[in-house]
Length: 206
Image (cartoon, rainbow, N blue to C red; front, side, top):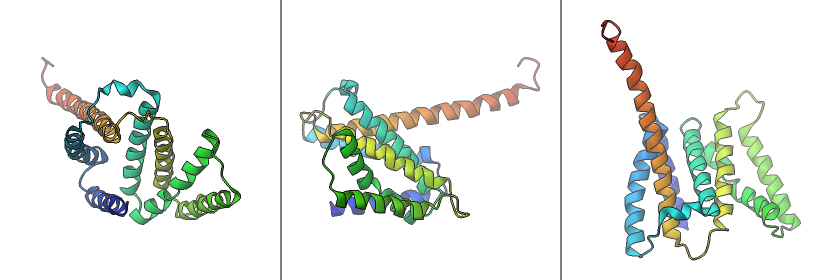
């Protein structure tokens, strides 16, 4: 777990560093392609490959949607606000998951946990500072990522246990990367069309 958290920190730091040179779509594409190769190799090695039709299972589909939303909003946030602020806001995720587990799954939450949840949300408000001059709308992206990731993690609880975890990870990675690639392709096509019209405008044949 410590190694995983260290990896997330390194990943976020690199993303913040390159965000001045690459847009979020390009960063996601590079990350996704590398992750796809590594996770696919691990899934093949563990004989965990399954049909992609499992996306039709609603918890799996909901988890993928949560991952897409969480990834896009969080990376957009750290590209615009200090990494420390985004990370601090994201620490509210366990609190939101606990709240969601109590409301959605009816899991018991004692008064101490409710106090911790309230204190955590107050801490987030201190960081976000709504209404203050230092308020940044990008902080709302970090808050949105918390919501998306909470949906992702709560949906994971309902995924059938016979589906390998590594395959769910591969499925999520492929879906996110494919979505990003599609968006980049449409954006590139949209930029080419005005350029072609501009190039053709002097000619009576255009």
